[in-house]
Amino acid sequence: MNHLDLVTPAPGISAVRLTLLSVPPTVVLARELVRYALTHWGFTRDVINNSPLVMSEIVTNAVTAAPRRQLRLRCALYEGTPLLEC
Image 1 (cartoon, rainbow, N blue to C red):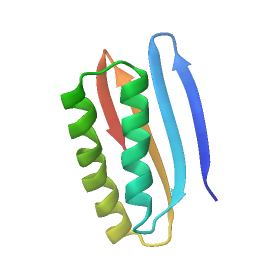
Image 2: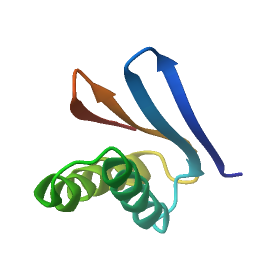
Image 3: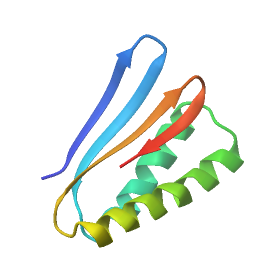
């Protein structure tokens, strides 16, 4: 079951969340989540191109450690800086 939420949990903090099954194709969706969010928030091309790679590493580790489990991904802004979580 996949679920996408576009939320603003607190004033000035934007976040995008995605819940996915922990399988290898999830890595591609995680990269696109980050690319979408950072593009929407107006980050530079370098940040938009490099941050999905970071999320790929995080999600790949999660897929390896907990196969076929539910993953909750989050891309948020924290004091104007991207925050990537899985």
